[in-house]
Length: 389
Image 1 (tube, one colour):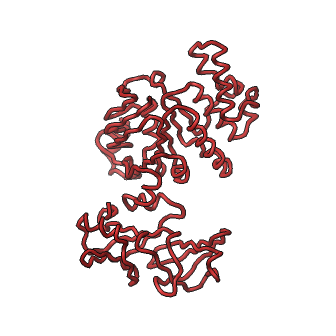
Image 2 (tube, rainbow, N blue to C red):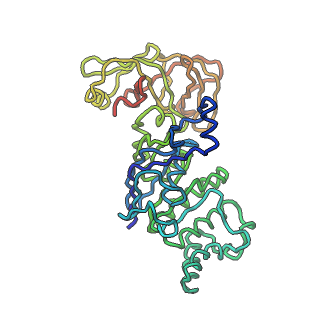
């Protein structure tokens, strides 16, 4: 069993004495969206998460949002400023990293350059003084899982980036940890290798009995790897859910714009309620929302108001009538074309099929587009939350 529970976890980086003195002399300049208090900079705040045994959790968000700091607190590499961390029901706040039964894979591999692949993978087991036969069995089993058996006698400098990352993962899994922590392990690889390694990690989690906590800023990794994803911004959790839940029902404007590629299109629009029916009206073009969406809006007591309307690029359709715009750029992507345009000062992208569309609009062409009422998302102008949820 390897259940992990984080309860009101908080991380504050205290001001240095020198900075405290300078703050008294000079007016403070805000260089970050993180909260700055008398204690210091709050990097993570009110972080609550229950992770089930063998679950694959992905922490995702832009740089500086607190995801790596959270992972390092689980590992014991960062002190927890507030809250409680439990692994299998045991409080871990004061437990040393070596006694937490976790393993961590870093972004930069962190391999010993003077050791062979075999010795790198066996190092932690030798420190435990395990029998040589047991060490050899564990190393070779991990090497077989990761398809690096033929490299066991090589030094890290003789390996490619993808092979080095396999070794780093192998070094972690030979320990059979309760929890595997991975901090942006694929960010140093090129696009092709990242795709290959994502597939390898998916296969790996099916073969080893452990819980994964994975950190990335790449939403594609989050969507393909995670059982659930935790979207973070400025030290706070924005939404927790399965990849499909977060994609289909973003909790707020930030999540809607962060998850999905290409990014969601946003428009200024009016939400109009007529009895139990709801309509959105961007640029004078009226679309009725689906019964399911209308029911949720009604249950939340939503009334007519100005909103930010969100529609994903692949949920738009070229039409004879609808919202009018001029194409700025056409990107031909094979089976589809990405049309870049501008509506009321907002850049947007439409994705159209090159097979179903008789003539692909090109730069300068005037087009009209629309969307169905079941794919529209309406966000509050006041606090940017999704009005359905």
